[in-house]
Amino acid sequence: MPRHKPHPAPTSQLRRHIASAAARLMAEDGIADYGAAKRKAARQLGAGTGDGLPSNEEVEQELRDYQAIYQDDEHAEHLQELRQAALGVMEHLRDFRPCLTGAVLDGTAGRYAAIELDVFADSSKDVEIMLLSSGIQYEVDDIPRRGHDPVETRLRLDWEGIPVHLLIYPAIEARNQSRNAHTGRTRQRAQTGAVAALIESARS
Image (cartoon, rainbow, N blue to C red):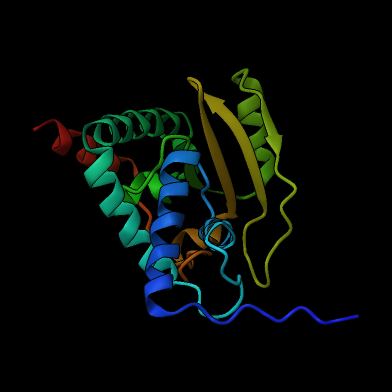
């Protein structure tokens, strides 16, 4: 049986096309994972999905460019809506020192982006009990841990029609920095006051 030849590594020009296509998928189709967007874009362009794909940083820059060109007003309005909703959730979870993170914080949130919040508790059950006592339904995310990932529990819930992902860390982790799973860079976090300031600055 003849062997299928592997796809050659993408050229620099093809890398840019893949980064652009991946950014479009993230902006328009709601794909939040950089790796998944890159692999799907590569398949659409007939390229391999192994070595030679653009970096997450390249895709992020293309995503920002795409949103600025094609979704400027819509994106700004949607981002403001997401941040205001995030602030509402954070105020409700204030006992657990919530921090906004992810695409809603860094400004790359697409049309179907979820709000990502880090919260800190002595026990993840404390957060779950508080949600239940407030009548807020949630689901436990069964994503497996990665390596030394300190996240205890991942919860998914709905807030005013917007999906929210809660990552519950042990209380001691509030003093530690974490890494972005997509880029490997230090994970940006913003507390309630910083999120309120972002919202106010967008109004001026």
